[in-house]
Structure formats: structure tokens, C-alpha cells
Length: 234
Image (tube, rainbow, N blue to C red; front, side, top):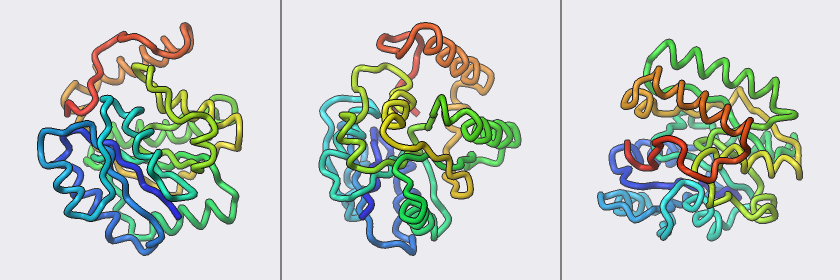
């Protein structure tokens, strides 16, 4: 069984599209867990309307929300998706689970591309995925909006580090990769929203990502606020 865990904070405008995608999947041995950080909009009502398992996370942030959702998961595997992502391919989960069983995949990220039709974002995403395949053996990296892992490994490493300000998803995969091989399944694709890129400006946000990456390389994990980066503010 697979547990799809979706952290949310005021996602009433985006969550329905993802849930509709999941309802249309050919694979049906899965549950959806919406882990909500006390939204003040209709996010929780929407999740319940789709018959999702819904839990409330007392601590704000994607790391705590993912951990809270995983804590009630019944599945052997976990798939962490963001509320503003899309999986329009109806065989998405079926193909993922086939690979998990046939190739013994216990930790992976997937291919990804923006929902919006922007050539620059698509090109950059394409090269990021390629770099993940090249460097993933010694520096595994997975964006939080598409991380696949076995529940056993998640529990064994203690989940996401809730004390990190940024890059908790990368640190998580780095620890998990010490227990199993890290895969980049680039022929199964998740679509992500460019809303943060649009809101902050592409140059500013890409520069911020570069700064965060450089900071981690020089100073280690980010345990204090080094820049503005809000969860649920878009």
C-alpha cells in the first residue's frame, strides 16, 4: 500500500486539482493524507470532501507537516507531494509502484516540470533533473514536492529534521540515502507550480536558491533564518 502525504497551509485554490488527479489514477491501493498546518481557508473542508485522511499539524512548516502525515500512514511506502503539484498522467502511481517493486526502489525523486508554459522554467527544470542523475550517487537531492521513500526508512531515520529553516527535504534524502540506493526516476513526471517564481521574480528566486546551496556547502544545514522564505504564503 502507498500513502500519499500532502502538507498544506491555506491551499484551497490548488489542492482540488491535485486531489482530482489522484482520484483518476488507475492504481487504487493507496490512501491520501492531508496534513494541515491550521489553515484558515477551506483547505480542510476540501480534503474531507475528497474523503482524504486529514490530520492537524500543530507546528508550522513542511517538515513537521510531512512528519505528522507520515505518523498516521498505513502504507509500506510514502509519497510526499505538495498541494500545488499535479500528476495528470492516470498511470502515474501504477508506474511508480511497478518500479518500486521490480527495481527494489526504496528512495527516489521523480522527473519534474512546471505546470505553466514557460520555456525558461522548463529548460532549467530539465537540467536540474539531469544534474540529479549525475550527482545523485554522492550528493543525493530531492525537492520536497516529489519524494518517494519506504515507511521503514522514514521511521528509521526519524523523519524530517523539524529544526531546519530551509532545505529540510535535501537533508532528509541525504540521511535516507545512507540506508538504501537513491534513484532518480525521470520517466515519471510531477508538475509543479511556478507561483513562487512568479511572485518573487525568477532572477531573485534563482539567486536565492544559489545562495542557499552555497550556504549549505560552506556552513552545513540551515538552522536559522538566512533569507525570507515562507511556507504557505503563495
